[in-house]
Amino acid sequence: MAPSAMSRQADWTRSLSEAQPVPYWLEDPGKPHPEPALTGADTCDLLVVGGGYSGLWTALNAKERDPGREVVLLEGREVGWAASGRNGGFCAASLTHGLPNGLARWPGEIHRLEELGRRNLDDIEAAVARHGMDCDFERTGEIDVATEPYQARELRDWHQELERKGLADGIAFLDADALRAQVNSPTFEAGLWDRRGVAMVNPAKLAWGLKQACLALGVRVYEHTPALELKPHGAGMAVRTPYGSVRARRVALGTNIFPNLLKRVRAYTVPVYDYALMTEPLTAEQLGAIGWKNRQGLGDSANQFHYFRLSADNRILWGGYDAIHHYGGRVRAEYDDRPETYAKLAGHFFTCFPQLEGVRFTHAWGGAIDTCSRFSAFFGTAHQGRVAYAAGYTGLGVGATRFGADVMLDLLAGEETERTRLEMVRKKPLPFPPEPFAWTGIALTKWSLARADAHGGRRNLWLRAMDRMGLGFDS
Image (cartoon, rainbow, N blue to C red; front, side):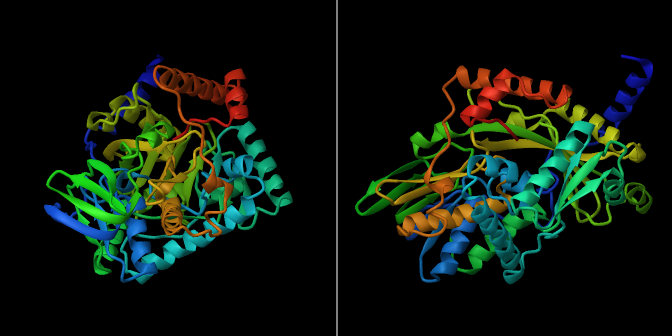
C-alpha cells in the first residue's frame, strides 16, 4: 500500500476510535420499559408471535379491524430489539424489493403491486398520525445513485423503460449536475429520485410507537416471553412459553429470521448480517458542504450497495456493502459486531464525502436480515388455516411488513381479497439447499457480484444461471 493510501486508511480508522458497538436507534433515553413476561395461562382469539414490525402491525391491524377481538402478542426479548430497531429506517412503498425485482418476477401484477404498495405507505403515514407515533416520519423519497458511468447509462435506460410501461409516476432522472445539486459527492454520476415512494423514519421509535398503540387498543403484550412450541389444541392452537402458555383460536407468526415454529418454513430463509455506522451530528458548515437540503434517503446502484440517510439530528447513517452469511445459518449475538466491515465502510464513506474529513463515528453495529431467494416476502398457512406466517422481507420490511400483516389476517379469516389473490401471495420462493450447498452457493454468488461490480456490471455464467432460476442473494 502506498504511503498516501496508508495515511488515508489510518484517518478512516481513527474516525472509529470512539464508536460504540451498539445500535444508535436503540440507545435512546426515551426507550419504553418492557412489559412483564407471561406467567401462567392466557387465552385469546388471536395470538401474535414476534414483537418486531411484522407482529406489531398484525396485532394493531387486528384490533382496528375488530376492536372486540382479544389479541395477545409474545416477544422473546423486547419489542423492536432486533431488525426492527436497528435498520436504516427506509420505509418504502415497494412490496417487491424494488421495481426491477417486482417487474422481473410478477410482470402481470406489477401495476397492482405498485398501487397496493403506495396505498400501504399512505396507510402507514396515516397510522403514525392517528396514533401520535413520535418516530421522525419524513416522506422525503429516495434517490438511487449511479457511481460509475455504466450505472448512469443503466439508470437512464431503466427510467425510459418505466416511462414506456407507465410506471414512472413520481420518478425523475437526475444527471450528474442535477444530482449533485441535491447531494454533493464527487462520486455521483446520475440518479433516479422516487419522490413519494419512500419515507425516512426512526426505526426503533416506530416499533415503540406501534407497541404503545397496541397497548392503547387493549392488546396484551408480553415481553421476555419466547414461544417455545406450537401445537393444536381442540379447535385452536396452543403455544408453550417458559413460564406459561397461550391458547388461541388463530396464530400469526412474525418471527422472521428467528427459527419459525413451523419447521417446514425454515428452509425458505437464511440469515444475512448487515452493518451500519452513524456519525456524530454534522455542523451547519458540514451540511452546507454536502447540500442534502431535501433529506432524501440514498442508495447506490452497485450489487454490493450502500444505503445512507440523515437522522433527525443531522447525523449520517452509512450502511450496507458487506452481506455476511455464516455457515449453518446461525444467528448469534457475536455476529452483530464486525470491526473489519466497519473499517471498510468508513473508507467508503470518506471516498463518497471527502469534504467531511474529520467527522467521527459514534456508533457501529450489525444485525441479521431474513433473506429469501426472491428477495421479497412470502406467505402461507398451516394447521387447517389456524396458523398464518409471513417472512423473507430481505431488508425492505419497514413498510412491507404492514402489508404482510394484512395478508396474514386475510388468510386467517379465510377471506379472498385483492391481497390473497396475488400470485406473489399464493406462490413461494425456492427454498435454500441444505449445508454445505447453501454456504457454497452464497459464497460463489457474493464473489460473482463483487466481480460484476469491478467489471462494468457484466454478470458471469453463475449469475446468469441464478437469474434464469429466479434465485438471488441480497441485503
